[in-house]
Length: 480
Image (cartoon, rainbow, N blue to C red; front, side):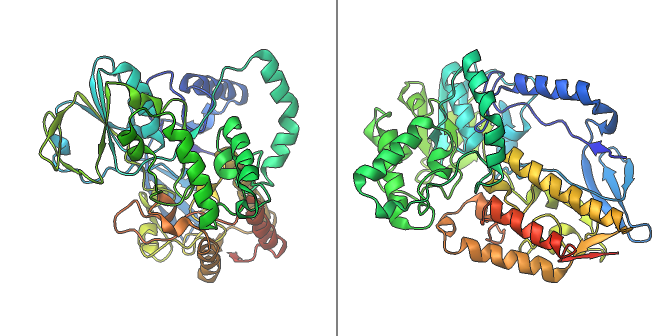
């Protein structure tokens, strides 16, 4: 029997009709699809809704996990498979006075299900990551005044979202079989991949022709279908950034504002912080009701009853403050739970000096715990549905092997964990990723060890590594 414990997430960060950065469907459409799947497959009978898991302890006598929830109930299971995603623990920085604000204040990940009405309101958005970009685009059209507090500009890419006609949909459906087959064989699980050419080997005319085609198609192509040396060679990276910069600056009327949003010289290599997708993000800054505060130059001092005071002493008054301040990403979903292993230690303590996770699905001292979309798997470097499907199949294959052989317990060894995390570090070292303070490297959370939290070798290589373990009786695991 499978039992799923689900805490209903908040609504989309923006009101009603908004579109997340990596999706072309609205929240209401996605809900309708989920409800259809529930009716068709009768899923609800095995799901406990509105329930928050707080922790779990492994019972070594019975080889079971005892899962605890916030309402005081417990559930026993032989195998615990956390499917928490890489962004399930919101991060709210220690902003002095935040509790004193008398207006409306929400983190984008904890948004009310019925939304927040920006109409006629004075709105502040702190942060310009993915959810910040979404909120800013929506609030700019509804609020009477919008102030964006930006630390680092987002190198956002054009989404190219459009209404699909019936003919468009029919054409896309004809391509589905080939596109679905391609996903598992590309670096990031999309139906496109890096251009097998180096930008530094091309003429300016050839290089820019390739950039123009990617820009025209939109989406993540200018990031994950670009020249293969872009994330390795600074010269190639500079070419990509210059192209991006010039495209963006052409959309911004004020030269001073353009320099803040798309600096002449890049602040970090292009693509080593996750780009967001946008529709009209840069155009909204041309509106009279939209203002930008660069908190790298003029930091936030305190939050007051009425709004936000910056270091220059100016108090900005607001009705709504939106905290688009990100997440304790990749491992944070697991470490926020009180997961206690066989030696009595908590998972968060075991990983306090860095994550070690064999194949990105298991870690020593925590038997029968197989996590999906977690640390040191492709997760943040991979298209979510593709990665979740492939890792889900891996975990099913692992449990099938265990059960068919009469086993009751499976756990990775400390040696296997290290033999996985060390190559992960080795793979990221020659790239440009270590040159930026990003959540990919855990740098957005104060005090966290700096390491690659995602497997950087690409999805095909990751699948090969799992296949090698499987062919060798699941090498790296102890089965009993």
